Image 1 (cartoon, helix red, strand yellow):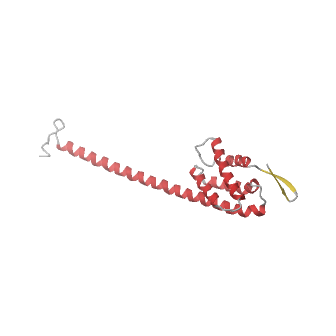
Image 2 (image 1 turned 90 degrees about the horizontal axis):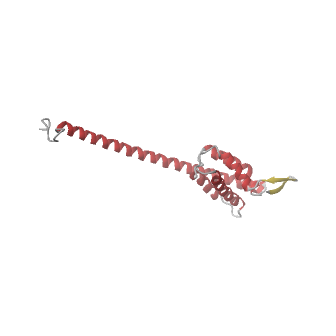
Amino acid sequence: EFHVRRGGTQVVTPTVAEFVERWASALAWTSYVPLSRAERIALLTSYAQRLVDSLVADEFSATVAYEVGTDMVRADFAAPETLGASIRLLDENLVAVAGMDDATGRPRLSRLLGGLAAGYTGALRDRTLDEQEAIRAAALMSREQAERALRDSEARFRYAALHDPLTGLPNRALL
């Protein structure tokens, strides 16, 4: 636990593990993620640690948050409610989890949250476009298969109409 003095009173701040437990609970019903609870906790812990490390880094960059947002979509945390719950929890807790004061941490956190949202929405858009392309390709392939089956059926019908069914020799209609 972190103990931070704010306004003359001591405030107990959450650890990364406590924060991740809350984050996992908040995301539990927002998206189907094909992982066990322990795997989700491990994944969210890595995300949280990367965000905390980025927040307290001497050379601050929101790039890490962009990557975390992208990774969340790749891991199937891909519902709008997931992004909303994540931003809310990060906004409320990450500065305290990092052990920073508000004056230093809040401006960085704003940029971090913007990076997270940009990475998340960009990855979600790319995923949607990829899925649309896969659907389009499947529809074209199905159409080609249906047309081929129709041509084959017409050829069999034409052959049956013009040939004797027993011998396979041409019939009167063909002659």
